[in-house]
Image (cartoon, rainbow, N blue to C red; front, side, top):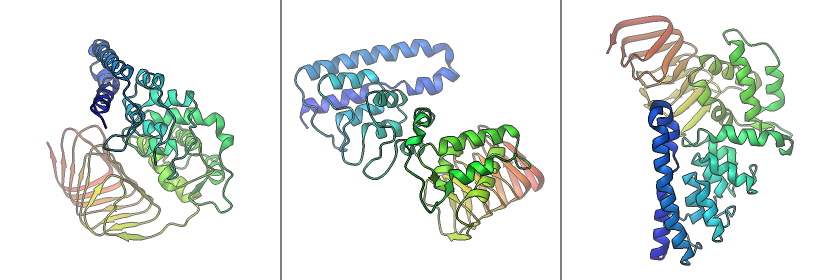
Length: 367
C-alpha cells in the first residue's frame, strides 16, 4: 500500500454510520438527536470531500489493506451510500467478491441496512452465497452487530420465495411442511394466541431461504424476539419437539464452545458454563457455575440445575431451577421460572425481575 492508499483507508473509516445516534440517542436523548445528526452529516461531507480530492489525484483502488479488505469491503461497513457512490464514480466494482467475502455479505454482517438495500438495488443477489456457503441472511442473523438487517432481508426475500432450492429427499432439522402442519393447530396450553401468531410469522421468515432449516438457524430466527417473551420460548420448544426430524438426545459435554447453540434433549455440562446464547429443549445440568452476561439468552424447556447462577438475563426456565446461590443483576431482562426456584441464597440487584411458580429460598437479599 502507498501512503495515499493508507490515507484513503483512514478516511473511509472516518465516515460515520450514525449507528449510535439511531440506536441510542434517538431513543434516550431524542431532544439532541437532530442537532447531533446534522453535525455528523456535516463532518461526513468534509471527509467525503477529502476522499474525492484523493481519488481525483489518481490513487488506485486496486489494493487490499493489512486485513485483506478491499476499499469497498471497508466502505460497506460505514453504512453510507454516498461513500459507495463516490468509490463507484472512480471505478470501484461494488459487487465484486474478494476471497470468501462479498460486499453484500459484509454489509449484512455489520448491520449496514442502508448499504444492504442499496447494493441489492445495484444488482447484488440477496440469495447469493459466499464460497463457504453462507447466505446473506445467515451472515446477518449470526452477527450481534446486525439488528435491523435480518428483518430487511426477509422483507426483500419473501416475494422470491419460489426461487428456493427444491426440498431435500431426506429432510433434516425442521421442515417447512411439518412446521406448517403443526402451526395450523391451536396454541398449546400456556401459550397465548398472540405468541402463537408471532411464532407463525417468525417461521415464515425462517423458511424464506430453504424448505428445511437447522435448529441453529431456527434459534437465530427466534432468539431476539423470545428474550422478553417466555410464551414464545415454550411455543418454539414445543414446535421442535413436535416437528424436528431427529429424536431428542442426552448429551454430556465439558463445555459449550459455540456462541449460539441449541440442543434437542437433555444436556449435561461437566464444568462451568459461560452462556453466550443457549436453548435446551429438555433438562440442563451444569456441574459448575453458570454466568450469562446481559443480553445473552438462556432458555431451558425442563429443569435447570447448577452450582451457582449469576444472571444478567434473559433466563427462561420451563421447569425448576435449583442452585446454591442465585444472583440476578440489572433490570433490562428477567429471570423467569415456571416451576420452583430453589436456592440457599437469592440476591436480586437493580430491581431485576425474578418470577417463579414457587420460591423455596432460605435467604433473599434485595440490593
